[in-house]
Image (tube, rainbow, N blue to C red; front, side, top):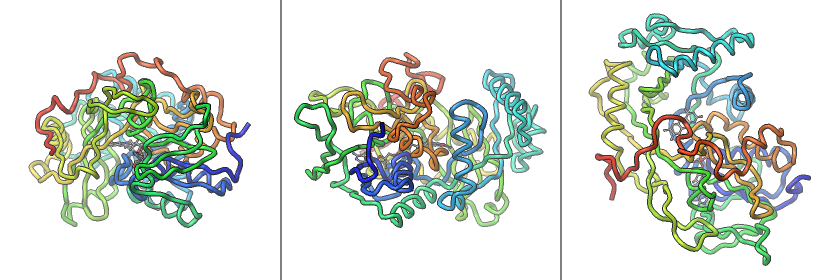
Length: 432
Ligand code: FAD
C-alpha cells in the first residue's frame, strides 16, 4: 500500500540537496500537493555535495541496477528541460595505469558493454590510443595507461543543475523552510513512540507531517542514529583559473578519470578548471548525539565548507592534485590552485543507497547513503524514493537499498582501498 495519499503532508529533510530536491521534484510531478522541503540553506544548498562546478556523468545501461539507473538518468539529462541545459555529452575516459586490477575490471566492463551492442564504447590499449581521443593529453606522460572510452557520457554542471531543480520546485509551488526553521534537530513521535509525526527544527518550530523523507546527505548519520550503516567522509577539490584563450583550448575535452590520479573535465564558461584526487576519503571523528540517542557517540561529523569557508585542505591531497596536473596537463603545473575545499558524502559499506522505510518508526523514509556516486542520478534519484512511497519500487532495488545494519563490507572500505585517514591525522588541514 502507498505510504502517503496525494494530499498528505510530506516533509523532505535536505530538500535543497541532491536526493532531497530530486525527491521533491518527483513528488510534485506526480501530483502530491502538500510537500515542504526543509534545509539549512536555500536551494542549491551550500552544504550539498552536489553544489560545485561539475560532476562526471554517463550511461552504463545494461550493467545491473546502477547501469539501469544511469540509463534512466541519462534520458533525463539529455531530454528533460530541467536538466538538459546542464549536460555536456563530450565523452568519458575511464583510465587505469597499466596492467592493474582496475584495468582488468574496465576491460570486463568494455566486453560486457560490447556484448550488449553498444556502439559508442572503445577499448584504448595504450597512451597513443588515449591521446587520439583526448588531444589535450598529447604531451601527457601516460604511455602505459589504458582504459575505456564511452561516447555516451561526459559531465554535468552540478551547481547549475541543482539550482535548476530549485527553480522548478519554486515554479511548481513547493513549500520551503530554510535556515534555523528548516534545520532538522529531531523527529516528532507519536505518544506510543512508534510513528514519526513530524520534525522539530533548530529554532523550535515543530513541523507536523504524515510522512517524512530524510535525505540529509553526509549529515544523515549525525542527525539520526543509522546504527553504523553510513560513515561520512570528505573528498577534495581545487581549481585553476584559466585565461579565455586557455579555456577555449580545453573546450569540449572529454571527461578523464583515473583511479590512481583523479579526474578533471572541461572548464566552465568562466574558465574554471576543477581537479579532484582519488583516494579513500577523510573521516572527521568527534562526538555527536544522533536522534534518538541520549548520550554522545564517536562518529565522523562533516565540517561544512559553507559554514567554515577559511578551512584549507590536507597537504597530501594538494600534492596529489599537483601530481595529477603534472602527469596529464603539465603546462598548467605551478599555477595557483584556488577554491580548495572539502566536500562531504556518506558511504554505506556496500556503496548501495539506504533507501527504505525506517523499521523503527512508521511514516519515516530514509533516502541517503549516497556513497559518492549519486549526483549523476539527480534526474531520477527522487523517482526511486517516490516509487518506494507508492509501493512500486522494483523488488531488486528494494532489497539492495534495505535497512541492513551489520551488512556489507565489515571493514567499511565500501569503495575499495584502505580505511580512510582521519582529518586529525593529516597535516596541512587548517581550520579555526
Ligand atoms: P547532499 O546533496 O549533500 O544533500 C544533503 C542536504 O542535507 C544538503 O542540502 C544539506 O544542507 C542538508 N542538511 C544537512 N543537515 C541538515 C539539517 N540538520 N536539516 C536539514 N537539512 C540538512 N557524484 C557523481 O555522480 N559524479 C561525480 O563526478 C561526483 N564527484 C564528486 C566529487 C566530490 C569532490 C564529491 C565530494 C562528491 C562527488 N560526487 C559525485 C558525489 C555526489 O556529489 C553525492 O553523491 C551527492 O551529491 C549526495 O547527494 P545527497 O542528496 O545524499 O547529499
